[in-house]
Amino acid sequence: MNCSRSAILLAVIFFASSVNAFVILDDNTGGDCELKNIGVWIPETKTCTLTKDLNIGLNIGTEIGLQNITLNCSGHKIVGSGTGYGIHAYNPVNLTIENCDINGFNRGIYFWGGTGNNITANKIHSNILGIDVRLQYFIDISDNKIYSNTAHGIEVGYSSYSEVKNNQVYENGNIGIYLEVGKENEISGNEIFLNQKGVLLIFYPSSEGNMLFHNNIRQNQTGAYTTYAGLYSPTVGIYYNNFIDNNVQLWKGAAIRASLNNIGNYWSDYNGLDLDGDGVGDTDIPWQNVDSYPVMEENGWFRIPYCSNGVLDTGESDVDCGGFCRPCPDGNACLADSDCEWGYCNPNGICGIERDLSIEWVKPIQVVEDVPLVAGKDTVVRVKVVNNGPETETDVSLDYSGGCFKETKPKILIRGFSSKIVDFYPPNNCTK
Ligand SMILES: [Ca+2]
Ligand SMILES: [Ca+2]
Image (cartoon, rainbow, N blue to C red; front, side):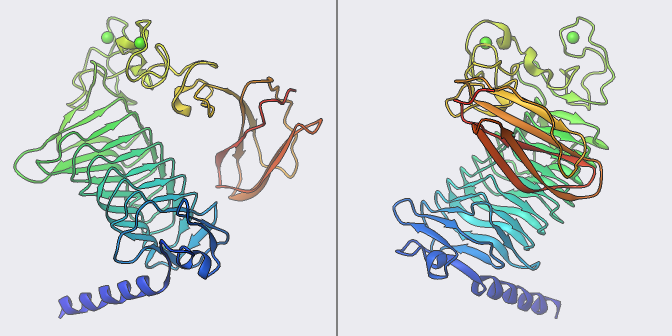
């Protein structure tokens, strides 16, 4: 009796989500992209750019997987009423989903099968599951903000060669990033905080080559939870992470290699001693029963020997800096913002200058101070707006006199008692 009741329920959900959704197709109008007047379709690049918010979800193709499609929401919202999928695709190849704000669905993004897909620069929040992708090869999930989903933030299942990187994953009700079976997957560069479990890793014996590295994992109930099914556990690499103030820093149920080049992780609760002053702890090891090389300070892995040998090595963006080494100063080569001291890698792959302003309280109008710009150098003016009150929306403006640059970012939502970074990019022929 219970069986048939669940079967009927599932059928209803599928029917609702497949009918009650816009459909993007690879034809003259991009399917509903232009037919239903929700966006602009460029056939040459197979790109649908949304021009309005949507209150039902989108299917990319039907039962037949499409290739090389891009959906650019251009910041628009796709809002559901608690069921169905925000964006659904079956067996997509080289599908890109970018700049979407997806909330209020059973699953914000759901892919079943596929190769080479990208999910980048989206906000995915207040769904049951934020991103749920299955049976993927070479999926790239990067630079998204994934928060306040009631179950998991990102779930990658039965997939291989995935990259989950540089995402902010926070305040999800159960698991922040859930990697379930598959090989050669990398989870790196993520900020993972205030989830029930920051990261959950489940492996089968065939799940070789998975890595969790270079992440900030803080204030979760459990930082990282590892386990396996089957007769033995493959080894997962967990190194160069900051484990900070998680109630349980690490649950070790699988085999873990907790160091690379004799450098491990930073553990906020490590209270051993560094007897020879090399930045790596020497007593109370292996810490957490896994880490024989706990570093003494946050991001302490810049002490890797290749970071001070005067040679450009694999893993550095310039000589002895970037990557796992110290961030590079202004003018050095970079591949990502995280390679740079100022946190800004310009489009030419050179570390630019960041100007940091801090607004200590959200007020109707607040003039902070002059920020100098240098002609010929790319600058990002990074405004950190601190809100010491309840959740609010505010405009943030940057105005250089002389008409060189003026921009307002409207209606920036700042959660209560938290802060938000707002970046401006003045042209590099400006001086001030
Ligand atoms: Ca030492
Ligand atoms: Ca080097």
